[in-house]
Image 1 (cartoon, rainbow, N blue to C red):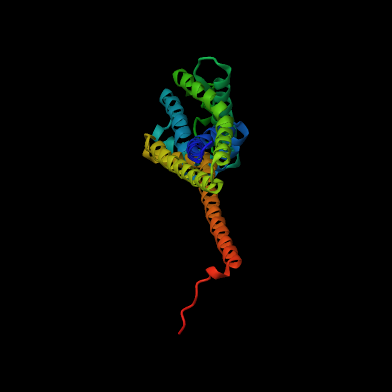
Image 2: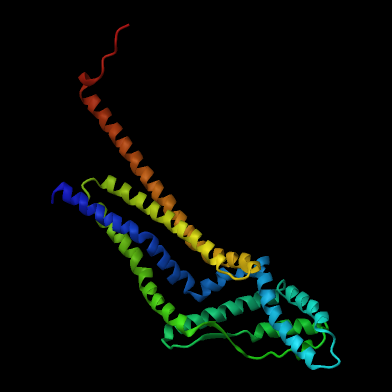
Length: 305
């Protein structure tokens, strides 16, 4: 095989390998981080102490409880005005989000949602994915009752199926999940094999290794840029501006591992490329020194003063 053919084949293999790097990292992140219930719950757990997340949860839960309280008060002729009860509800719900009970309910809710979505993706049935948030309502009701909020003990705690994923979206998500589940393993392996093959067939392996390292760093930078753009688009899609900080905090928590991997790829690639360049310089310097030592006549003569 001629040198030109070897270099062309090496360049093609290395280019394909570097192209697979960001997609392989993304697929592996989805497969081994997002799709694992334990890791997902552990990732989301610290958000229970985030003020923006607490505020968003309190607004959502409080709105539902307030609606039920207003309905009960309107049905009673001797009940106080709804506006006089609403501040108690809001205060109780916001206070609840700062308790250990909320942390427990937050973890349980995230586990229930993740388990429900994961089961739906794997069982092949077409249906709307739902979860039961009655335990959270029960804990808030208990807190309102302890604070002697009027009619709090009448708030119904019903096991209502709350939809979290429509059936039509589930079908599309299942197809993507099946592909990513396979790609999460094979894309990184393929990228490594292609890179090794490209370096092996190259006429100059040091140069091929440098190109692979720089391509890997470029792939990591592209992945970091994609995560940043995804965050901006995700937050801007939230309809309520007050809940956008919470959406940003959740996005940052979920993509923390992906951002770390992207910057590790950048640092690793640049470090390897720099080491290759340094070893090339040292090798050339040693070779030049050896040639001068072997042939003293080649030493430049100093001009006489």
